[in-house]
Image (cartoon, rainbow, N blue to C red; front, top):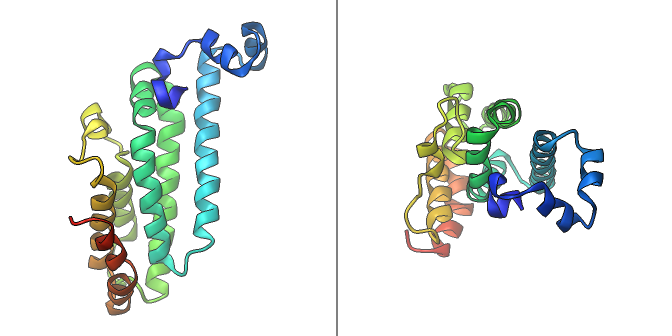
Length: 200
């Protein structure tokens, strides 16, 4: 309900009815509305992280992992937009505690992935992995230390082509930090698939 309608629009009565329980039972399980919001956001993030980890287990290499992360990030950016804006506006403490720690965790994982890319010969050894990881996550998720309504709510134009354009931009970014072997893998295995989805 939070993701469909926005946090502010959903009342505790609505949640109780949707769960088929009394409002009193709801308050027996959560200290207050803020606790419910915090636990819901944490649960959502844990769920999508688990789903992402399962998808990553099928990746052939780190470039494939970034491709999967790109699809995940585009989905998060679209589906979580209302919630992130509401957290920033009405629950800044939850935003700082939960969303920013999620962002930091994604940056750390992307940094480690880039280091593995260097070790496996797919990424150039001269890149600053922490800097590149932070920029990758900033672009992909729309989450960064200078987060603003404008950054989050910015649309990419055509809604149908947005995710494909983002996917192409990410792959071209990765191509720029790739070795010849990495570029060849992207050119042969990923870019043709993206190009087939739509004319960009």
